[in-house]
Image (cartoon, rainbow over all chains, first blue to last red; front, side, top):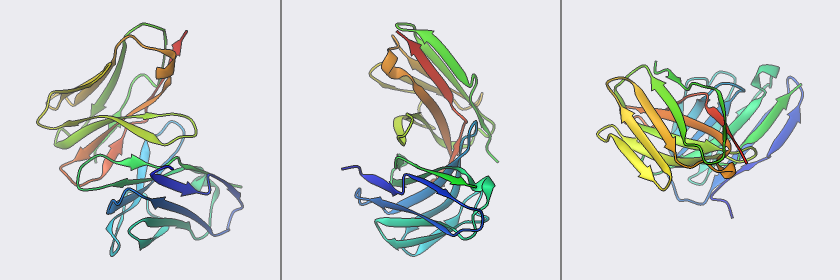
Length: 111
Length: 112
């Protein structure tokens, strides 16, 4: 089984809908991250969490919110989706070392 | 704000040729520099991590160098194979803040 899983893997939704993307990990890492990737651009950090009670905004947090339900679960929500949030979303985890481990990604399309 | 650039955006080589992938960054005060591989439908896989105090790291056919003073890192892949076809991304971590700044990647195609 994969160490970092993301659900759903693909989602098509309409403008204005609320969407939740979920991430689970079995690596026992404290740190979790949400990134988005747009074509031709590098990954951009949306939110990150260093433990269950610690949530921090990344460089592009506007329009997004997160919830750290447990050490192993970190969810990303789009309260009212808009077309320019169409992107590939990645969850990642790390422990106290710099190396980050990524999930397979969720491809989100907002019509 | 750290800016990370990877040129070229795409590269096509015949099998067996050595690959040279470039990464440049604007702020030399980095904690480490990482190279990742991205395959379609899959997440990123960490290939090599170079700490700021190191000049290079090697793993099998892969070698990555780091020159902080010039703001550059290079990933060398020896004797390329079709299985090396993927997108390669570099990412810099600023001063141990656990946040990565990514380049847009170089998409490599190795022709059999």
